Length: 145
Image (cartoon, rainbow, N blue to C red; front, side, top):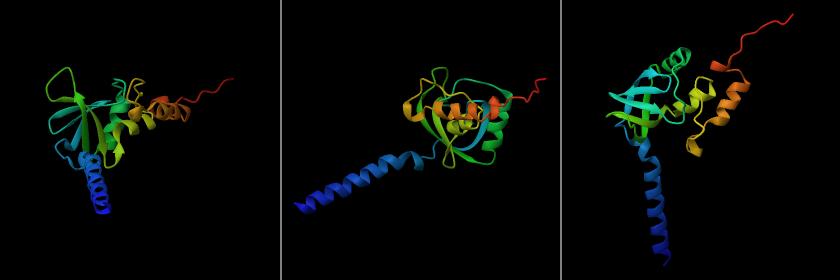
């Protein structure tokens, strides 16, 4: 009986390792990225709207995202097909191991979507960026006399 249990446990661990790591080895949606707007990138001719962000097109956000992604391979995990057109997806994308949406919100370049899945809800990151006056939250210093 012990051999059966150990084989079953080993099979279970291998199965879950494969399931958890499969997106990391899927390179179908990976490559250099071109920034379309503050929350949309293009990889291999496919547009990926970054999941967890509110639609925005602030010029400084576009510049920050372009600089961040320069020279990096971006891997996108598709969450769903975008309703507007073919070859457009809503995705969670990574540059190396960094979640691009989390990076945008943490550095103050994007607003978090409050309706996003709780695992990809970046509202706390947005609050910290606001508190630290990062990115779009920078305040101009004014002297009150």
